[in-house]
Image (cartoon, rainbow, N blue to C red; front, side, top):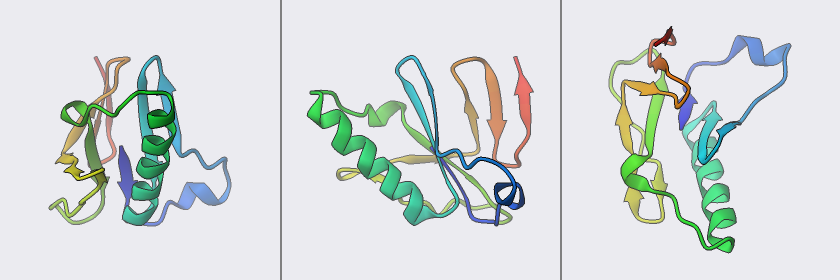
Length: 104
């Protein structure tokens, strides 16, 4: 799960994407903390109806911002999601908070 506290210049001319899915993994994308929390809440509400749950032990938040500290308090129910500096996508790409992507 990601959010970008800086304005996304490219969002003005392209298609806005707010989730990426692969098998049983979902990556949520938002420009602001509140937007990310709304997406997390919508996901949680949808999967509960299917009898599923978010594994918060395997769920993280990456914040792409100019500041170096993570101030995200995104939650699933009462569980606070861990804020990390990089994310390894299931397909092997490492995405870092400085917006670099490295293929493994």
